[in-house]
Length: 286
Image 1 (tube, rainbow, N blue to C red):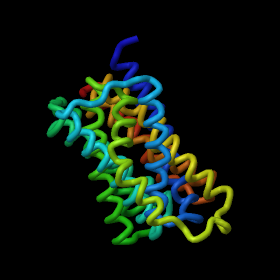
Image 2: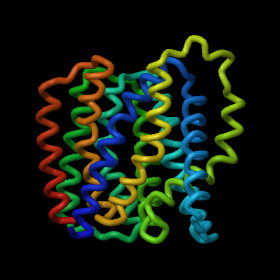
Image 3: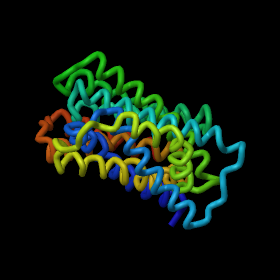
């Protein structure tokens, strides 16, 4: 199997894993404060990542790799989780999920700026069409709006695209699972103490579903999903494989409808079809 094909398959597993992140976060927010949720998920995943690195005797990153690890951590360990958790206080998970469709174009731009990639011009056409349809659905078809909630989601998408591109570039030399583990570990000195700063007065009112939501975003969204995602981006190309995120919102919609009983419209189905076609076109010309 070609490296690019392996990259796309690995990236698809990562996208499917990430599609549960926002619905799971919404469930977890029923029992936890957004800030505590952010530092808790990062600390749980970071401690587990540290165990993996120690047990498997992985070499430490070089000094030249540390800045990229810090940028990756800023984007995917701190920025995106915190900003999305704050946004979910104002809009539904289904509404937030649509914004994830803007991640491919954002990731591709950072892949050019930071990763040295140069996709052909038809790639940008397909990427822009997909982003426009997804953004249009977010603005007109999701049935709700919040200036603050949408602004927080746009900021989350920006920092996440940066984190994806930085982590994927480093994965080419450090390895996919090593990058996310080290990104989590370098954030531990800040995130772990913050757990105790924002420790709730009581967990008595926290439901089982909220605990399960925290478990999912800590283990799968924050760690295992990135192992497949960074590997996919490194093998198949950051800009190219990143287009798979165009279909991530619609996996998320299905989960939001199933877990949270949030509505799914016929418009979403048509936008899904357009997004899939754009992913296929972007793959061909990347």
